[in-house]
Image 1 (cartoon, rainbow, N blue to C red):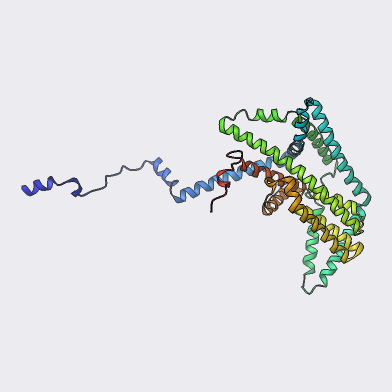
Image 2 (cartoon, rainbow, N blue to C red):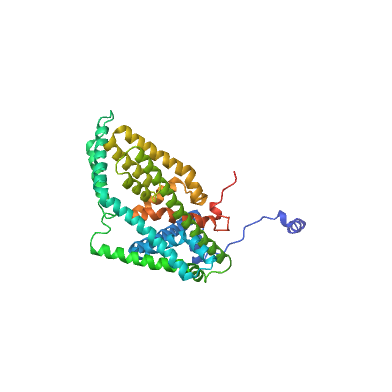
Length: 385
């Protein structure tokens, strides 16, 4: 009996510890448990990615279905952002909104008309000669390749040429964009819409943006404000910087072509200016075309000198002029630019290639001010080493 009493009076720490019986899981709890383990987390992330991709695909499909509206809106936004400092300066001087808008709109239309006239003049007067010279130069280039010790399959070259001709003559490249009455009507409709939308963006752009921000409050409102300001800044810097860089490139290459006595110097300079709005690829295409014309007209030495001029101008522009005119915020990595150009070209042809880089720069600019005026989103901040 004493032994039994001693056992009963033993301290709790000496007793055998047994796990309490857990109640059985309900069907809802068992279902929730399936999504909380490692595999369930992976499945959740996969579903989230699928939803995001589906939303992006739907947005892209909608944009491609409404290009007559979307493209003029984007172009009007870019032009309005580029001339925002002009509008701001005139308003600070007391110029009425309507007068300032009409002056700015008239200036934009005159500049675009001059560029269009220059393109039409160059194409109408010398495009046949330019295409003939480029084709002859390419044939000379193929003949030179045939003399190399490296064996190159002629059938493969023919396949590449056929594919290139098919791309150039396709509607995707733009040669068939204005073919037919329907395409001309679409172009004119887009042009009129561009002018009208540009007028309202110049005159009431700030009020429109304030109206769109009414649903936001607090930190979300401040973030939307920052993103809007950054968008206008990035687009304006891109257009002004790219136009200045393109003009300098065109003038520099024009001087070099005139010194080297390369024919069709002015049309080639016009092409340099236009293709400069397609980063990396545009300068390469313009340089190749100028070298092919020089090859046919003046021989190998002259063609190599033209290549040297193009490379020198591009290096000066990329290392000195572009950082000053466009700023660090627009200096996207070359890999990002190439990916953006590829996606833009696949989705929108030439217009997509032109708009891909500024849209990518806007997205990156929004990331840079996501958490504050100088504070990027948390995942985009530089990590301490």
